[in-house]
Length: 221
Length: 212
Image: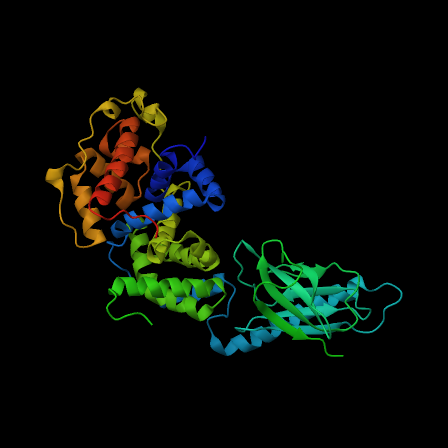
């Protein structure tokens, strides 16, 4: 099926929006959408055309618990405010423990001694936090978001070592929703902090941060 | 922020686009505002297809989770934010209707033998002339909603019925065929030609619906 010939894309888009494109055809169309701007444009056109019909429906005010349920599904603060601080503490504690365990676990070889260093990276805007653990020999680095970082599919998070002198050094890409064990030889010696920037999918094309810096944390010795 | 001369619908769209852009950056406050401004309308869209109550509310939750996660995609897609969100709500409700057991699909075996054609090209109605919106059927539309309503009124009865059943009831081709007691191939043709005629009519009265 070549969706790029003639009026077929528009026809498929129309039936997709109407809902009569169903089953396997609907799933295939869904799968094609992200990579085909022309299809997306056709869909947006039909959504705009058919919107007045959809919005003629009488509004129905949702009960308050719907919002709480949405927050729950997104893994945000629980409905009861009083417990949210305590929960955050335990979330943070659990994450720190995980990060420390990973760092310690991978550094239980002869040589490095001492406790891992914990670096907390705060959001430059907003309240999200990332926690990083660094082994005493500075060769093992793990990092984990406390809350899932909202990220569009065409973007990546890149971790940087901020040095006393010179440009930031890339430490690679990190996951937005789970622990990343950073694969690197060693942290540059004069590293004074860590930062996470928003980059195009796959990481900065230039070797230097190109997007906004989302998180920053200092290494305190 | 916006000029007071703006129509309130435009103003709302501008705000929605702004909130969506902030959602894409992880701004929960913006998400809450977006929810407050749109949830009743989206629940209305869903309830139209699945009825009011707990099920519609569950689907609404899914819709907002999707909107939060896909807010960045909206920016790439352009078009009207309200249309995009209403469509997201519709798609969730339709997915539910199509999911197994939600509503029995019409068995193909129950349909007339000649109804099995994939796209209805062998159906006699396909070769019938399409009256389309002639000059006598032109009308003045003051809003897009009026234009769509007016254009729907210009469609052939069977096209209009098929589109309405698909749109307002969320029926599939097979379900429309069963409902109208018509061959599946004819229904597919009516839907397709109804959409083409609707688009032509909207364009002829200046509501192209093209993504801006």
